[in-house]
Amino acid sequence: MDLLHLLEAIIALFVIVDPIGNIPVFLSVTSGVPQEKRQRAFTISVAVAMGILLLFSFTGDVVLHRIFGIQIADLQIAGGILLVIMAIDDLVFGSQRRPKTADDTLSADEVGCVPLGCPLLAGPGAIVTTLMIWKNPQQGPLAAMIAVAVVLILFRVVMYYVEQINRLVGRLVITAVSKVMLVFLAAIGVRMLMVGLGTYFPVK
Image (cartoon, rainbow, N blue to C red; front, side):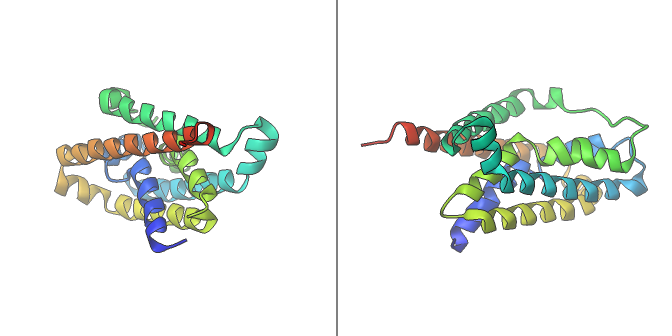
């Protein structure tokens, strides 16, 4: 693994998690959590997301081959289609499907686990991407673990200053960044799809 492939892994996961573009979402989800407990919810979400992503990475072979009987190429094809659909869905319908607010009865721990930790951080796209990085011979387990750690640490830093960022940058700029990230997400999905298809239909 070289620095370039590590950087590619970090960027791919960062684009999918999109901690900058999703600031309005995270603020909306935690709106029912008292201000003094909001940061605790963000910390818990990082721990939950890291546990989920690494668990799926470590147990990927067992889950895929022994339980479901599928290959990495199958996951690449399905994951690529999923990422493209997610990107298109968010670009077209995202603002209409965002969760509006957290239930006032929910605690910081509950919100940190669901929906912040999963599915907002460790969603299907992030799980598939982490597993693909883990299985990529040019990247591997170390790159996957570093990418997960770097992206989630960046998320935690962003969330620590989330109120200041939201006031300074404004919702319009954050939304624009989010839409650009979704275009990159679609491109990553297309590339993943083509790599998977190449296993079954190699170019001669």
